Structure formats: C-alpha cells, structure tokens
Length: 229
Image 1 (cartoon, rainbow, N blue to C red):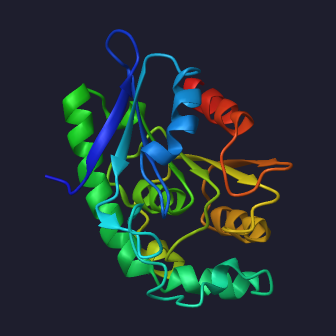
Image 2: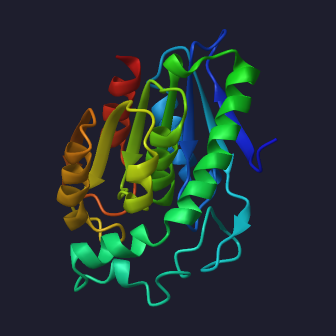
C-alpha cells in the first residue's frame, strides 16, 4: 500500500477519468480545496483524488510536505529574487533522490486509485501545484504506463540530471504559471520549457497576469479544457 491518505471528489455516475491532484509544500488537501472545487465543476465524468502528504512541514508543523526543501536549501535561496535561474535549478536538481522516492510512492498510489475506480492510464491525469507540480512532472515521466496527461501549476523541473536518465513515458504536459509568482519564481519558466523541448516532450504552456503563488479560476479553466479534450 502507498503512504498516502486522500480526499476525493466524485462526479455523478461512474467516472471515466481519474485526476490525481497533488497539493504543495506547507499545504494540505484542504488548502487547495478552493481550486479543486472550481476544477471539478468544469470536468465531465471525472473523479478528482487529492493525496495527503505524509510529513509535517518543517516550516509550519500544522501543515504538510512531501519532502524537505531546507535539506538542500536551508537559506531558501530559491525564493531570493537575486538568485539566478541556474542556481535555482541546481537546488532542485540536488533533491533528485527525494523526488524519485516520492514519485515511486505516488505511482503506487495512482495504481491503487486506478484499481479502486476501474480507470486505466489512458484516462488518468496527474496534476500538482508548486511542490506537487514538481512531483507530478517526475511521477508522470517515470511511470511505466503513459498517463493521458500531466498538469504542472507553478512548478519547476525537479532532479533533472537523475530524471533525464529515468524517463520512460512521454505524456502530454500542460505548464501553468503566474507572472507574479515570487515563490517558484516565474523567471524559471523559460528554462523549464527549454528542458521540456530538449527532451522532445509534448507540452503547452499558459501564463497568467497578476497571479502570484496561488491558483486562480483562469488556470482551472485551462486545466479543465485540457482534461476534457
């Protein structure tokens, strides 16, 4: 069994599609409920499952994390506007082993949810916000069976050196990012898209004005169109 408890939101009738929506660092399923509720209202025949991270957050013990950022970045340089994109990518690159371990657990969780709901990989979407977006990217690329798509909201490529050696699936990707994001800094998006292009991945992106490190209705509309297509 996987390590993760979860909340789920089921549409009427038997769902045909599964969306696994991974919350972020210093977060919880409840913290992204506003976005999940907005998304599910626009989806057809879907069940949205939100796994719960197993660890108390090092920043705030009342919330959760999938893995530690402080382990490789105790000064939280990745949020410093003076940090270069190369430095930011290097921080997340050094966390490759941790992302790989989390992705393995997430893929086990996806297997369990697919069995529970009777849904295959061709009708499964992996979606995440912030640290959850990073996990969604890693999970989708190393999953043995190709999912229908991956949606990364306010993310960055994690553990890219290790990930490049482990890619076995190439699903469709949708990358969403707010132009005012100062946490997973918006300036990293061009390097993220360049990495996707270098790997020959099928991706599209959408950028949003006046959006900091949070999800909004326009992003959920874009994600819903991607899933419903």
